[in-house]
Length: 446
Ligand SMILES: [Zn+2]
Image (cartoon, rainbow, N blue to C red; front, side, top):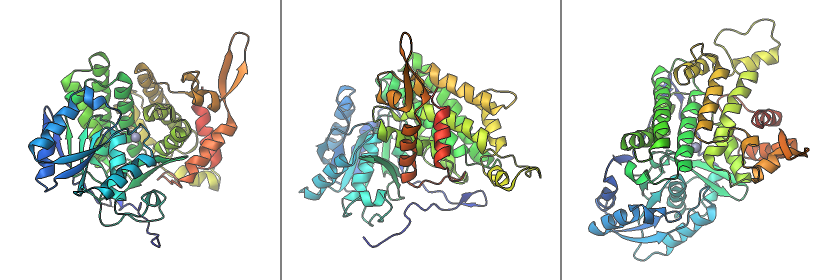
């Protein structure tokens, strides 16, 4: 464990110079899940570890379809069930042990599920030949050369994990991510019909996640990366339109297919090309938040934290491309020079949220109304009053008739900030301080 390579280092990413790499083969559309056996066998694998979640794939026909396809193509499999949302390290270790002890040897991993299942499989694939995969999440060790090939049957479109090189796993109070270019799936099938039976809350959480991926990319833009910004904006518009339709008819194939494909493109790299690596502070704080309150879904946390982050940025950090005025103090000048650029936020407001004047805060209001129309709380005070996050993040006082929780509980916000800083994330918009995070979370409280 003597290597201290920076395994999270990114290649250059602005229009001056960027690299783009994505080797995942996608098989998309009606009946495509039946192709997974062929994709595996044509690469000479005859024994795989099939990983799944709580059992919904046995109700919607996907399990039957996939195992039939494996049989027809001469592929044997061992099953590992029980991956939960906010997937945990213990399940990763379980999978690693099964593969290490397997005879005949398992040579590939098959994820059948959504982001949590896929992320668990990436960590298994990287961990079989590594002394302790968690060391890679900590940045203390690099992945070994031998990463097991990963195949995916994607049953929830949201995280983009089916076509990217990242994964997020929780180990006690650390919900951390790992990226490596050997973690791209080899091949992924996506049949939108398999997502008809998803509960509405899963569909809308996925849509919010995918929108936030696109926005966080744009938050790193300087304004001249037209190709990527325009692509990200159009993905967001597509996600909004499709999700609005699915709210009334979950089996609308066209809407479902457009949401699936837009969510994949939202985080397979194309919507982030040349955007200075984006600004992922919202995702990082959400990971800290849901590590404290696992009952919060990823989408709920994001719906609360993104609008407040943009408001906070507008208050403290936004910059115009024009030179700072001479009346500013030197420290203000430094702050003013940080991205994101006002022009980028203004066009997002205009092009996506229909605010003709391009007023950024009006755009954020519209984003919040959209999330609320899908049933997502956008403030801590709107959470279920019984939830731990509601009780802990807000200071409660007994009113005449009821207990009211509205003001931010600063102590708990500081605990949250500590978890955020543990990962040492430094976005393209500069490092945040503890007070910044507390102030940001205050804007999300009521
Ligand atoms: Zn996400």
